Image (cartoon, rainbow, N blue to C red; front, side):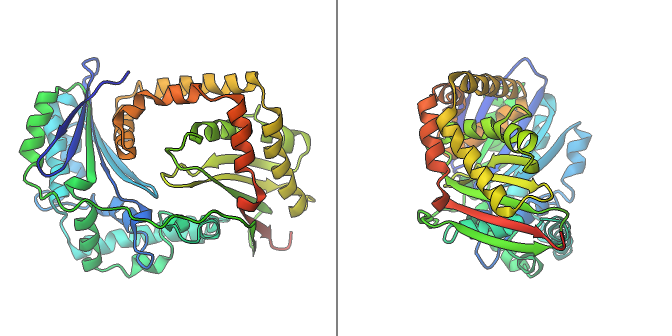
Length: 412
């Protein structure tokens, strides 16, 4: 059980405090409720750009990293379709340093044109390196746009087009920042060797004067139910033919999410998994195969991908994936389910031994609407039955709700 206390400032900033006297460290995690799904379709990649730009200095602090390093701390950040997350970990005795740094960049960045142009170039180079010049690099752009026709999950976090970040102006940056990076649109978690009273004192000292801003509403269009199989064929200079199949699945809060995660585990985790045994080891259809979830808050994708062995046709590879996935619905056993339950219970329990993981997970569950969800997640997984696995697998692996990218290697 992970215990925590809640503090809410007058400006709307929510603060969760998890006291753990067993560690001398403190983790400070700030989750901003903004991701790629919140971007203007004509100005994408901004959430990822700000992941970089937020380290460029703020009103009173010209360099974010140096003071934290002097306090024996470290930091990082990540962006997804749904959130942007920043974290610091440092000795608990130096906790105020993190409050000083985080509050100043929440107050306002140093909107310096040279800094913005520098980070735009960094993001654009990342776009080119990983999405344009990398073999199969554009597959997420193609697959997302194929699977989503209305919802903004139709572009990845790097952005829809390189030009969107290239053409970003200072006015664009300021508008995005002051809309989303506000106290009312954030949750702060402080975990480790801390006391709630001290955290509350520091929070009021450093954050209470920051204007709360407006609560950003995520009025996103709901993706219509997909009723047709969609196939896109690409012919590019890549080493091997490859196939990517994205089946529509439930949202993160749906009762079927945990069963969907177990299905992914059974199909693709380790050399004892079904896809590896059936399609790599036995039938030798693929040289490699994997399955994973997009893990989005709104309706997501259950993705299966594989690199074809020479001589295997794309139709045969496609059919092999469909048959293996559907076979799970008919043949899942209690022993197989118990195996993934044990693995998941061990993973979730072990991950919560890390104070930074606890901080990030508390912020994530608060984003989902209930921070106590962190204490109920294991029970949800352990409650899954073989009957539910069968039902959910049949629902997911409907070919009429699947979007497929067939990636053909030229001259192969």
